[in-house]
Length: 104
Image 1 (cartoon, rainbow, N blue to C red):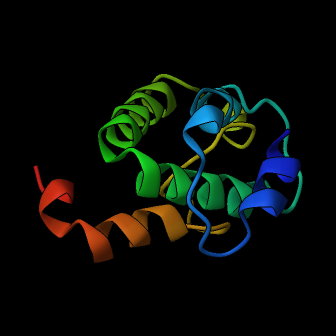
Image 2 (cartoon, helix red, strand yellow; image 1 turned 180 degrees about the vertical axis):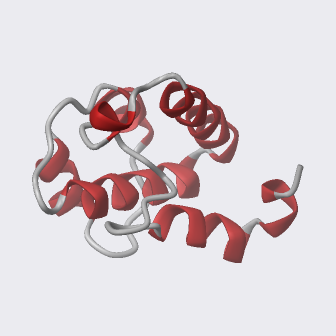
């Protein structure tokens, strides 16, 4: 599902409202890793932010809490919005487009 959504959304496409629950569940329940999963997750999260910013920040918060409670060995199989070696495009998108929302 991750790759299919990412291909559908390509660079700057807005996520259709009907796909919001699927995209959100895909990001929350990512349980495998391939070399492109960070990039694909960020692409989906950016599209989600373009469609529903409040829902995106709820997802973002839940991911931070989930990562805080996950052992380092298992975080590689989860979407990490702050990924250092993968893609941090989602975090960069939020900071660039919604800087006030990114501050505590």
